[in-house]
Image (cartoon, rainbow, N blue to C red):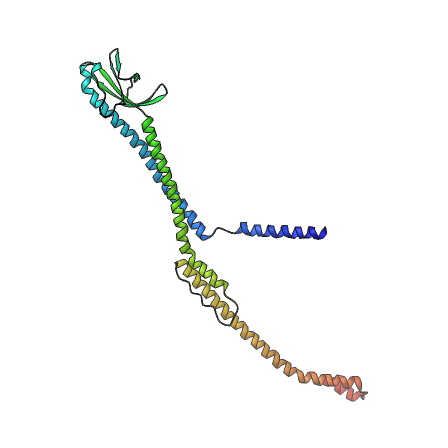
Length: 288
């Protein structure tokens, strides 16, 4: 059980180290370029899309107002003839026309438009939004002509265009990110080549030759690395020369020390094996 526990502990430790290395890795340059491109495109697309969004909304509203202007312009000449003589506009049969003259109110539809003070206004009638164009006619009597149309078609058309804008914006951001990813592949190719050349460098007699082209940054890094390797190889040559000098010095020193050491060993053997008179012993000791 102790062996199994030790194996599990080592396995957990190895997994933890592997996970920590994975999470410590930073995103690649290619990923960063694609991400930055997508963010930049998203900012530009958001600004442009917002302008287009607002422009579409205003344009649809202006088109509706122009429809009401045309219907009102067609109806105004018929107002003096009588409230019942106002025909529908031939270009817009769906508009509601309400005429007020004193206490008299006539409408060409079951819907009666309210009396509004502004020329263009939006109002709700039975839960339905209407855009109303109001025209004041002072002759022959003070008459108010109100021409209205529902927002349904305008809102549907506007929403349809808004959906198209959203689709185009999303497609533009995605295309920008993909394009950034593809272009980054060419941008990082010199760095990959530089990394491959660096991994192939081994300690040897000849200094490595690093050649990197492409992006200016990659060339600068390659030149800096090449200069660093040249300095390292110069120091390596100096170290080799110093080691050779040390070996020569050691060999010469060993050769020079061999003779006196041999003489000292001989004298010590004489002192250890022979019974010499005191004078000779002193002479040998003095020699040692």
